[in-house]
Amino acid sequence: MNVEVLCLGVGSSGGSPALGCRCPTCTSADPRNQRTRCSAVMRAGGLNFLIDTGPDLRQQALRENLLQVDAVLYTHPHADHMNGIDDLRAFCYLNRAPMPVFGNAFTMQDIRSRFYYTTLPPAPYWDKPSLQLTAVDGPFTHRGVMITPIPLLHGKWPIFGFRIGNAAFLTDVSEIPEASFPLLEGLDVLLLDCLKAKPYPTHFGLDQALAAAARIAARRTVLIHMTHELEYHATNALLPAGVELAYDGMRLSAE
Image: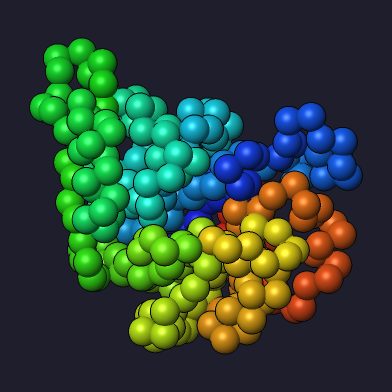
């Protein structure tokens, strides 16, 4: 199954440029150093699966002319991955239907608690999102497309990455449990968390990301969820063959 991946955003919670910063990344004119909050679309079987709804979702969708979202896959409920949830209203309106949403039970309960109004039936004017929440704990099929949640740790939080076909998206990772590695075999494309050069309690640093990439051995690995400390050209020059930095608007394909 062919899977197309669109990187809507590859930045960390603060985005790049960072407010008030004059570092080489933040002052760069190269658009690959300008990073909105982390999110992606995985397209398979004619369906667009949106991964996370960060606070830049509207801006990202306008930039990429994204007019179709068929389901949302949530990795976890941190603000930089969820707080654009109201922007799903536009896609519910375009679809004239509630939006199917999938994630672990912890994340679904967070939506019910913080964004209760999104779980109500649709209103006549689609003036709010209308979401159909489904908690998943293993592989599932949506409209003929198989989706495999990848259990991960984000500090102490149990979160999900997602695999569709031979493409996988793993953000906000501090540890990949041993049982998850078999779920990542045979990848063409791996999008992998790499917050900064040095280790961080709740994210991979560069050395950890490279070690995980080497073990998973995807044909192509792109690093995501980066702070402004990782300048695009300088960091790419340090990376081994088959590993590179992602950038907003990057498109990838897996067979």
